[in-house]
Image (cartoon, rainbow, N blue to C red):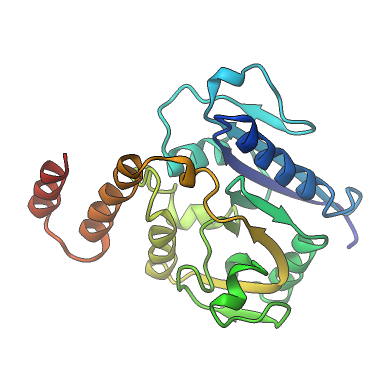
Length: 244
C-alpha cells in the first residue's frame, strides 16, 4: 500500500460483569494487533452500555457511554456519526480478529470497485454452513452465509444511497434488514473468505433470561415482517399488543 488506509471500527459492548468486559477487551487486543499501523490505522469507538463501569476507558480506543436507551442500529448510527473515514466496520464485541483480515478486505474492494459491502469469514461458523474459509470471494446476501451481522464492513459513501441504519431494529433482525436494504438499492455485498474474524456466538445475549431474549427478538421480527414482507401496519400493531 502506498499510503495509510484509515478504517472506522464501531463496536457495541455490554460489560455487565468482568467476564463480558474481558470479552470486549480480548476482541480489541486482537483487532489492534491485526494490522501494522503504518499501513492501516483503525479509529475504534466502543459504545459501552454498562454505565456502572464509567469512567473506565478500553485501552487505546475511544470509549463512549451513550445516554440514550440501547438500540443496536441506534448505537451503530451514533458511532458512525462520530467518525469520518472512507471505510466503516460495525461489529459485535465478541470477535477475534486474525492478522491481515482488513488487508484482505481492502484488496477485494480494490479488485471490485463496484462492491459496497462485505463480511469477513468466521473459521468456526462458516465451515459448519458448508462454506470453506480462504477460498476467495462469495457474492450474495444470505444472512449467516455471505452476510454476517456480527461484522459488516462497508464504504461510507454507501450511506448516501441507503441513509442511516433503521433505528427501529433495536436488537434482532438488524442483519436481515441490512441485507434487504442492500438488495433494495442494488448494492453488491460479498463474503471475503480470506479475511478471518471469528465470532464467539452471542456471548452477551446468552446471559439474558428467556423472557428477556423473547423481548429482544420477537418485536423486531414483527417489524421486519411489516417492513419487508407485506404485513399490514394494523396486523403489526395487533401482534405487538398481543405480545405485551
